[in-house]
Image 1 (cartoon, rainbow, N blue to C red):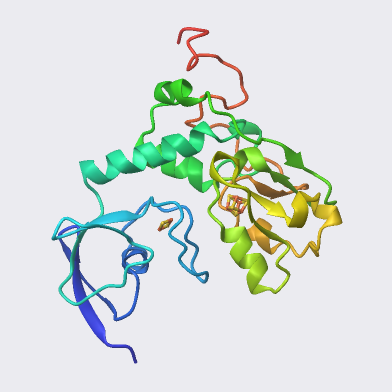
Image 2 (image 1 turned 120 degrees about the vertical axis):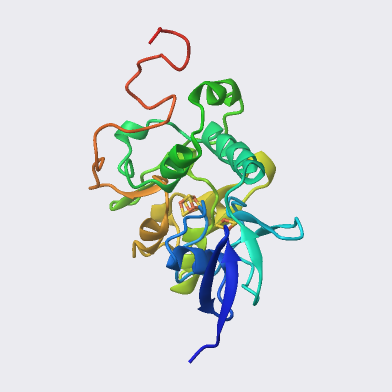
Length: 239
Ligand code: SF4
Ligand code: FES
């Protein structure tokens, strides 16, 4: 049996197994810390930086990668942290293809949920949407499609593909051109992908979705380009 230790999280004393990450400890105790690139059962990757928390000595650490220590005091919800998270999420949404209402992941998309949690202001996002990167769609696979415009580069699909030993996808290119790609950027159907669907299961947004999947709900989005075309957030129409 694992030794229990005590930490203070957001002023609340909780007992957790030694060796757990701060994020695991928080989630087990129903304390939500925003996160995108973490999924229980897969290795923490530290890619999104959304799970940043503050230790009592003022350091910012990723909750998914940092192990709990006995007596540790951690703050997961503060103005400073939420300001940083808003910048991170705003930049992600800026590069995100925003037809949220038509997206099969609508209602289950972690990016959408975290945006809503942080109260991301859609007007500010509209100002940011100038740098558009690769938003091509690879629909060569008969079962699922890969929408590059929705990918947040969390790397969960790469890790799950690696775990099952197929290694069909990986990060490719650099800087703003970074994307998840097959070897030589071939269409999925021409790659070593075996269509197992593991990557589709792990993707937290609508970047890898089954072709048979339909939007899971009708309306609730913070996205300024949701696909309805109301134009309110763009200032084209008043509200
Ligand atoms: Fe993450 Fe999905 Fe992009 Fe893969 S395709 S990196 S799981 S967002
Ligand atoms: Fe910790 Fe992404 S969830 S860095």
